[in-house]
Length: 192
Image (tube, rainbow, N blue to C red):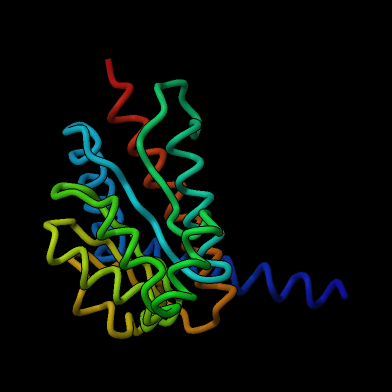
């Protein structure tokens, strides 16, 4: 068991070391934070969506913004589109599952907002449908994916691609990147 534990920790660290050594990925993280900061300063909101573990990451990041990350500040307008079970199940039932995020973007999104789509494969149909809806409404799209970027690579305004193909390693990096973005937002919005 100890060997398995060590193996998982080493693999997780190795992916983060690759991110640390890649200036393009680091700059994409910086750009994502800048986009969020500018939107929030302009009274816009951040919407996030993903499936499974990526839904949990979306909810986690939204909670850090609405509550607080590490700095005391007013709550920031952010929402994870997977958390309203009545809306998600109604849209899935009345339309189809691929529309659960698109319909919410259509109803809640405004030009100047940010949409963060999280998908380890970059090919989640419901996240892609939401991205396509964002394009019609003037909403900036940040993607967080795995190494290939999938279809999201070309659809997003900015796509942060974690250099891994293993789902767990990608998700571990996504939440780290989400925390970094939250930290940069805190710093920018509490600077005196």
